[in-house]
Length: 414
Figure (spheres, one colour):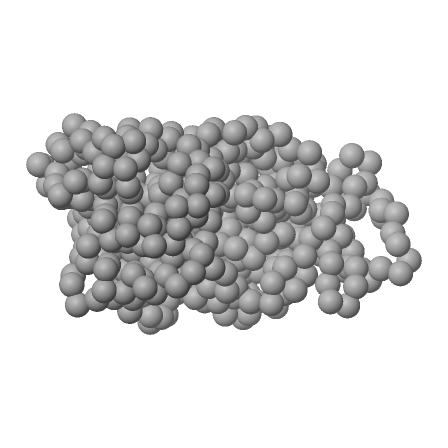
C-alpha cells in the first residue's frame, strides 16, 4: 500500500491481500478460489453461521459444472438434495412444459434443490484446506478505509470490538443491501420490480404436485419448491401489498393459497401465524460502475436479481469464477489495476443485462397479468410446450446462463 491510513490506536488490525465482504455464494466461492490460488484472502461473514430464512435453494447445472472442474461435484452431491430435471407451469389448469435440463451437455443435468446454508457450508469446508484463506465469522463490515481517494481496507465490528483490515483489494459480496457499495458511493441504476414475494413452508401431503413449478390462477401466482418433506412456497404479490394482504387476515391468506393449489390444503395449517411468512422485497438493479480504485463489487452487491428463474446464486458464482480468473495471478504479484477491475465488469455485464431483461419480461408478461386476472400464457410458452425440442433453449438460459465461466485461476496449494 502507498500509505498507512489514519488508525484508531485502540482498534485491532490485520493486513491481507484481498478482503472479501460477505460470505454468500459469490464471497465464499471467490474466497475459496483465491485461497486455492495462494492469494492471502480474508472473507468476512457477519453471522456465526450460514443459516438464514429462505435464501435461494437452487444450484444450477452451471454451478455444478464449476464444482466438477474443481473436482468437488461428487462430494457435493452426497449432501441431501432433490433433483429438478424439468420445469413447467400450470396456467389456470393448463400445464405447459417450459424447460428440460436432461438434454444439456453438462456433468449434472438437473437443478439441485439444496438449502443455501448447506451449499455455503460445503464451500467453507473446501476452503478450510487452503492456508491462504481465512473465514472470519461474526465479523461485520461497517465502513471502508480510504487512503488518498483509494479504498485501502475495511473497518469491521466483532464481538471483541472494532477491527481494521488493510487490504490491497476489497471485494464487496455483501448482497443487495451492500455496505461496501453504499460507503464507496457507487451509483445504482434501478431497473424496476413490480412484485414482492411472501415465503413460507407447508408440509408434504399424499397428493402429488409437480416438484417445482409455477401455479397461476386469476388473481394469484404461487411457486412450489420440493424440499423433501415440505414444500417451500413463494406467493407473488404486487409491490408494497404486504400490509393489504395481512389486513385481510391469515384465514383469507391460507384460503387463497389453497385456491391456487388445492393439494396444499392438508397441511395449510402449518402456516400458524404471520411469523411463519417472510417478506422478500424484490429488487432488480445494477451498479453503473462496479469498481473504484481498491474496490470491486460482484454478485448481488453489483446487480440485485429477481427470484424469477432462481438464477441469482448462479450468476454470483459465475461472477466469482470470472473475478478469480482475471485477478488471482495479479493479486499474487500485487499488480491489480483499475483496468483489471473494469475488465471484470466488462466480462460480466452482458449476462447480467440479458438475464435481468428476461426477468423483467416474465414479470411484465406473465406474473403481472396473472395478478390482475389474466392467465393466458404467452404464445412463446405455448410453442415451447408444443415442440419438446425447444425446451432445451430455456433450460440453457436458466441452467447455464449467458457467457459460461470455467475455472482458469491457478492452484498453488494442495
